[in-house]
Image (cartoon, rainbow, N blue to C red; front, side, top):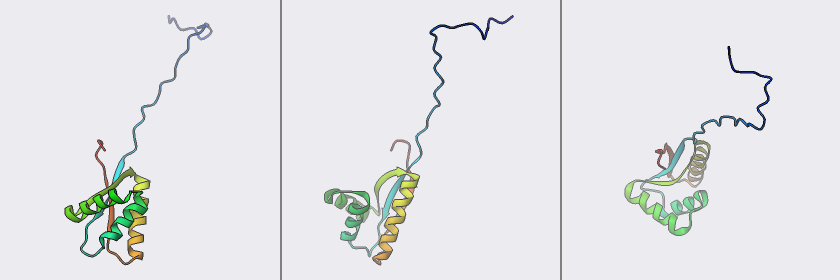
Length: 110
């Protein structure tokens, strides 16, 4: 026979509901790719306007893109990263520059 009695009063005993394990959403790096035609000033403008970088930080990222071929603009959730990529690519085309922005899945440590 079982010891369980649904009519028994447990007094002040509180049973905490189990909390679900939450997982952080995947993150994505937004990167700029170097090309031989987009002016450096335009890249700095893009970094300031779309990624809220100050002039010094935007210049550092632009030089990294220029020397290494690619540079990280930021790490975001998927929806935000997709929006940033679309905004930058549209803005670049509107100004007749071939600057290309892409997103890639970030490692867990970022």
